Image (cartoon, rainbow, N blue to C red):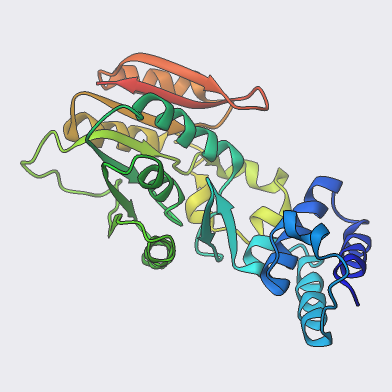
Length: 283
């Protein structure tokens, strides 16, 4: 079977369950993983013969993906800001809107010589690693409550040859120390979905991605924003900046939390879908 024939078979197999955009993404990552070709190389090598063993491995992955398993978990990695990021069910799959958050930070700090950054709730480490990749002079730390997530984050740092420090930290239950003014930037994509929304969400997310990284109590959906604002209030340097990813329906409420903790110059940003998904403020 040639690569072109294999690509057609993959696309035909997925056609009944996925959009054309998703099919193209899945097809590209399957061929990259098993055949070793980037998307631009597939057409150039379209008549290359693919051995039966490779075809069988691809068919197995397709079978799992058709069970509504996220293809990123089946493949074992995804791409984020041009970085290869390993993922498994202990971490969230990085989203495009999170790339937009990173881009927002980077575009405001490309001329800054030295930055100290902390990413709270780092998960796979995608935000911390992308910031280090784009802002090479920055000193970046990623923290998370999950040891399993930190294991993945450290592997991703090694995979991408990036010097980012990762450590275990529970922002809801920490004892403040006497150190102050450690960071120029605090960034977080915290859990922000009230648990009551779980029933209406796509099962491909709720059946596979970690609840710990997604959901908040119905009676306190802003619990992580408050805790991180409290932390940032103590540990940001003067004029330091706090960046959050947002639930699109809670941008005004998060703004009020930030104001309560003394943050100023608050700016709310829409993502490419026109939804309010990012917010930043200055201490």
